[in-house]
Image 1: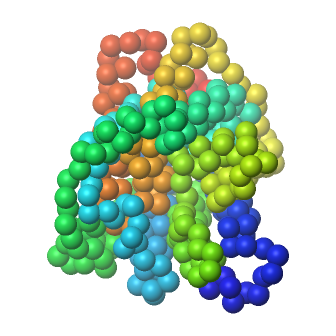
Image 2: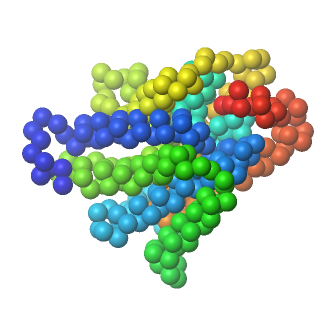
Image 3: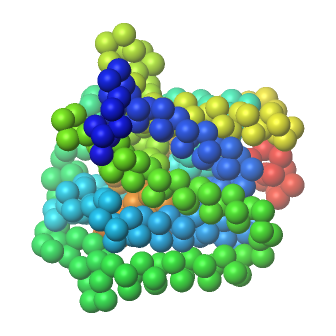
Length: 357
């Protein structure tokens, strides 16, 4: 479709960077204002409200994405999340690692990126380490480990998504949306944060349709992408150190947009505060979590946003397994750390709210 716009000096890839920047700005501002975070939805002091926010975003993301598929604008038939060879060991182990890491760092990578924009240096350091490890796992010294774990696969045949099950895509999309809205109704959230959550969810189908339909160029095709932060942070890191040799991509625009949007929202609402580590023990905990999330995010095929919020709407079994593994890892890690190590116990509610990461 992109070639019909008549652009002569701008390629589809260059336009996708600007498009991702706009998506990131909206995500960063909305996530800052709604405190959007999967970890909070699992184990936070206010997990019922946080779960309602996350569920509202997921409901809109599923409905919008599957509506676009039904219209024929996009298709996930060749997408990696719908591969017939499911790397079950890599996804399961990676999800557990990512879930453990987000508990150690008190936030999934999308939340930490947003907090970085509000002056939280702990979060910023975690994001940097996360990006380094993710890049090392994708293309560096940890790549052989990724390949070895990814070689253990389960042949799903035609059953690569919920759409292949009895009832089809419409039925299972309705189940996901209805289940999510049930959590929303029980969350006790006011209308304003739910509107912000719905906007976050809407960004998912906008991303898929924008890159997979509007900006698709038959002569110079680009990858169909949406909100995702594992590969995006690694891409941004590589671009930051080799910008003269490689062009910016969708992921770079997305990360820059999130940081800018979160910073702007924090400044306008008085939420910008410099924060840093309080002890060497805390530093070690956060760095350990960053490494686990960087490695785990790549193995699982994405983070709570990439494999979860944007992945689940594809109805792919891989995305569902990844999100379930992340949730299991987070719950198990929180229980173990609370039970056996006072160093890692979450602070009281009031202190946690002041120092949340």
